[in-house]
Image (cartoon, rainbow, N blue to C red):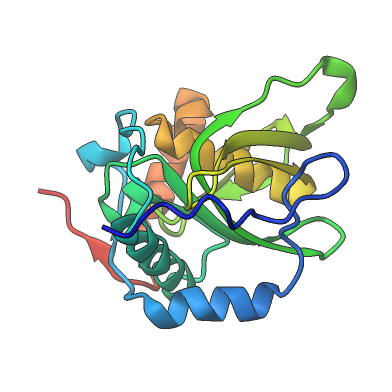
Length: 212
């Protein structure tokens, strides 16, 4: 295992938030070029329905996982991907996601924790939401339009990521995954049933892992 390189700090702004909007294309392509796309786990797979394990080792294996996750995300045409969506029981997610202003954000968060924001700092956005692990299904889901996630980068350095609009939804969605919660778990019984019907009637455009 490679020695943990904590001297290389992820760039941050004046408020200490990760700068994830620079060189997005080059960074995403570099991750993807090193990685191998894996099939996506779908609702019903046990790894999606339990809290994932905390990451404690920040070395070559984690770096290779992140590369594979970016490759898998691209192959499935996603904007975010959690490790358990490729069958890995670890608290890691990657993202390559625009915000509502069209600004692209690209990065990785390890051991994420969603910060509880005061009511005055957020508004609910009830836009449609989908998930690679619930393929072809979409449903309206109210979530705060601002999100802050604390965690670590792939080298173990403490980081925090802030998102608004669609990117805020992505941060919340992917953090949920790593605690065993899918977006359909936040829907009413009727809405969840409808989403599962959409999934059953649709055909995924990417490779999935068959449930036993």
